Image (cartoon, rainbow, N blue to C red; front, side, top):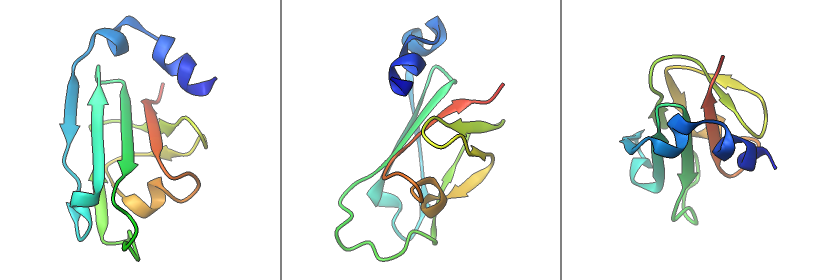
Amino acid sequence: PRLTRVRKGGAAVRAGGYVPIEPAGDWAERVFAFCRGGEVLAVVPRLTIDVADWSETAVPLPAGDWEDVFSGRRFAGEVPAGELFALFPAAVLVRAA
């Protein structure tokens, strides 16, 4: 239900294009991230069987504050992937009001 609300949340999200986000660090190639409509950001790990530690991999968020749909935690700036994946194996962030 939470993701459905995000998807239905606004025309900007539905009409906006996908902008890739480029992670940096040791496992950057194992993180897929994109922003849609400037309002929703999805971050998912891939090929993780041999990833021992996400601490040296970070995801640069677009300017502003972002709230995780699943946990309610807020993020800004460059966020370690381990923080994004700490409570759930993927992150969907929405621009915080």
